[in-house]
Length: 269
Image (cartoon, rainbow, N blue to C red; front, side, top):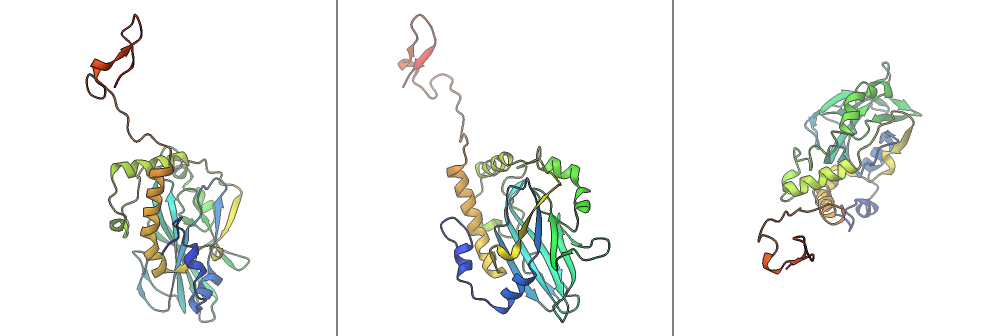
C-alpha cells in the first residue's frame, strides 16, 4: 500500500477521480500553520455521508445538518509529544452543496467552529488554525491563544513526553513497541521542540495534500508508523546503550596495557 519512503503519494497518483473524491477536494479545509511548525499533514482520509452514522475514523457519531457531511481524517506523523497524530474536520453541506456548519477536533473533543457567530470561511474556503506542534483546530487565532501557556509548555519541556502514541485503534498493528522505540520517538520530538510564534502563518491546503478515501488511509497508517519507527532506529543519531565497566566485566583485566609509571590503563582485550 505504500512506496519505499512510506508515503501515500504513489498510491494517490493511481486514484480514480470519483464523485466523492472531487467533492472532498473541493471542500477540503485550509490550515493556518505556525511558522515554527516542523511537520505537515502526511495524508488526509475522507468519508462522505448523508445519514446519521458512526464516524469511520473517530469515536464520534456523524449527524449531517441538512444534506451531507464530509469527514476529513488528517494524519500527521507526529504531535510534538508523540509519534502518530490523527485530527478531524467535519464540513456540513446543504442540498445545494453550500457549507452550513464546520466542526473540528480539539484535544479529544469535537468543537463547533465559529468566529463571532460566523463560519470560518476565507475566500469561500473553510480555514482553520492548527495549534503549533499539537494540531488541534481552532476557528481563530484568538481562540487558539487561550491555550498559549499550555501550548508553549507542550512544545518545550513537554516535548516527546509520550513516545509512540499507543492509545489509538491501530496500535496493535504497530508490532512490538519496546522502551527503546518509545525513547527514539521521544528523542525525535525533543530535537524538534519549538517556540510557537502565534504570528504570521503558513497556508497549507488539504486539497493539495495526499487525499484518499478513509479505507485507503486506514490500511496505510499502520504501515506508515512502522516505517517511521524503523527509520528512527537507523537514521536518528542516538546512543543505543552506555556500558560502565567494573572488574572483569567488559575487559579482561589480565590483558590491560598501562601507561608507564601509572595505574591508568589505555588498552585491553
